[in-house]
Image (cartoon, rainbow, N blue to C red; front, side):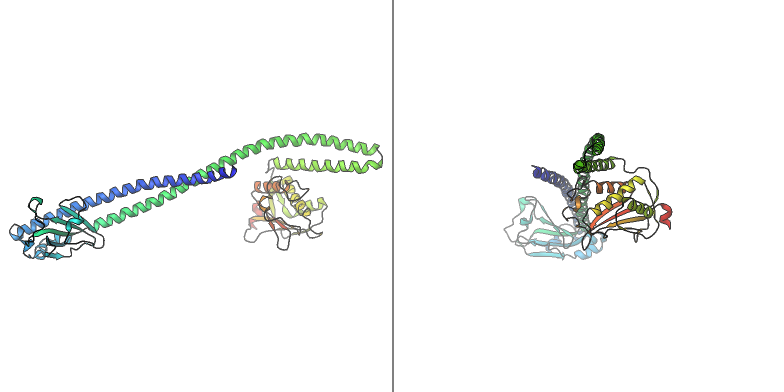
Length: 432
């Protein structure tokens, strides 16, 4: 069920985005088709107007009638007197019913045209006009059947013209068509970007809602844990007090049993203290602290053996208790890693290329962290050690991030772990 729910969470947003994209694309494509059809109608109207103007000019120059159709007439000479027509007319031709060329001017052979069967090119039932847009020549070719249908005898070869072909330049039409397709492609790209962005926003919003729900649950859990830790500490203190009294009045032979009680009480106290550290306000009361001297003091007070080097004096703004908790938890983690005696090293330095931060690094040569578990080491109560509480690193990172820093844990080459704490330097130190 969980797998199906996870699959549904991933698939449904994707399916919804695809559905919205298809609907938007269909709408945009319908607008594109409408625009292309409108451009075609406009191009046809302009071509018809050009042809009508040409007929009027030819009638006037030929003395009326259509003698130029059967008798070659100097159309070029006529067009010379009409520059506007010459710029628009690409060619003219007339054919007989059998497809024999009677007259031609310019280039009037659209791609795929067969003069023997002009009616096969009709796109609007058996209309008078057949329009062929030729993309290669950027022209509109108009085929006109003659004479009128009632007088037409297409099967008789009498040498009379059966149809015309007029080829009219239509460069603007192709420019508009390319522009319309470019706008459509741009709209598709914008749809993809917008839908993807909206999908990401919805996904992030869902993630934020889940995090908010988890935070509310953590707040409730934290309140319960704080209360529980407080309630546990009181009886632990009473148990410890009674154990001390029993140790004074009982024979020494019960000392071993009392020592076990004392150790377990101490372990529970440390656990409740760590839980309390994790639940308390992480920032505290920041004050200027010299990181090297403070770390040296923590190391001395703990009584543990570890090498220490402070390369320079670095001041940071941090609460004393929080900084002590960070360093102690990192040191305790290194000591519990199984590192050989004398192999733990603590170093305070300024990172190369990042002079606004102070770095504290704790190195050990212990067993390291299994690669499949390293991503969970900061999860509260997750531990790879049999006696660990799993709270120390979570506390250290929480306090470090509250101070504007970070904590990074990595396995070292040759074995062991490197824990790198980065804390912003105090302003005066960063300028040096």
